[in-house]
Length: 413
Image (tube, rainbow, N blue to C red):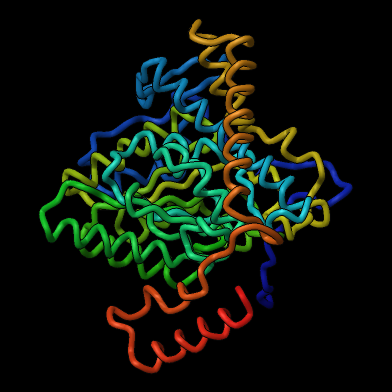
């Protein structure tokens, strides 16, 4: 019998009925929570299962229930709503020609919000381009983020980065890169350095499931395994790498989390739309790392509800209404329902919070555009081209800088 090349199957295309029968769902509370020093092989069932806390009645159940107080839950809900509101406003701004490009995280807000809240403020974060919630949870200024998108006179990247490629040294968030998977080896290297220095800080990094096909991903896992780097490595499995289904990245036969135990680090597969489950898994992995037991690879099973970016049209490669029937639901709706079940929230509170966040985003946008836009207002100082490259500017570049500034002065610019 001749061998045949296997082609992964895409469950549904435009015009067809959404089909999520391939997603392995485990009942909430069914997965055991081992001690943080469990041997790597002991995490294999967790890498193949699905850690869930919120059940169908929006109650927190099982051993992974993190027992968060109501204030922390409300904070998480606010970060997610702020993320979604900011995303919607920036999406509209791009459509209006106010900014050139944007990427929303619709449907994935819990992955960033819960993890950021579970980690310590000094832990170093290495985000991908769909982790806006990390910046909001760390309290970064909305005006600063918007100014980077506008590339105006307040742009934190001084006009040198694509939109959404933010950073914040003050908030311990590494620069986002459009080169896929580079943040994984950077995070592992940072964690190794922290361990060498005897610090208790750890690193955490995020990438999409498609990026697991990149060599940098595998290099990072090797170093993390060999040196027991104190890192939390997150794979955000949102089912689509632009228009390519996750099966083509290797998610068809086994889970992405299983690659952790496969190489020698712990692995967890988590309901990425369950705020409590993401918090609990991140906290467990962070404690394991801090106590010297090595890195953990966490797969967050979620769904990219929107387009990959403002340059993408997802209706060309998947059913239009897939998110409506995604079996793990909407992370904002689920946390809201849990708070209501606890008696710590209601519809009036939710409406008031949504209004408050909308006003905050509107005020920030008005301030951000006062520093310049794409087509009008203040612009970056051209002399910035020559900064932040050399510690001491070489004579050749000094001459070029002086020539440029003289020419601009002649033009009255």
